Image 1: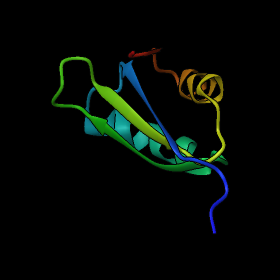
Image 2 (image 1 turned 90 degrees about the vertical axis):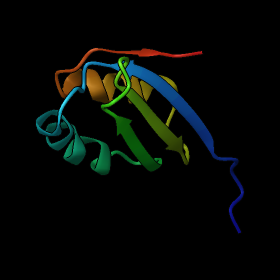
Image 3 (image 1 turned 135 degrees about the horizontal axis):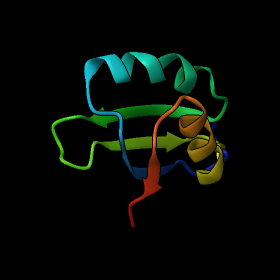
Length: 75
């Protein structure tokens, strides 16, 4: 059984097209502690939703920034 509670973080990003999603996909998929993630490129804020299975908000931000995108937490 899963002992940790899963948390979903949402972020405003500059991941705005299929090419951007393709660029960030291997980076996010390789990150330990991410259960799942999606990017809504139709939303004006290009919302990235990450379901955490151990990764922290700061680690997600650092990962996306290293891939070359701007990211900020949405409350």
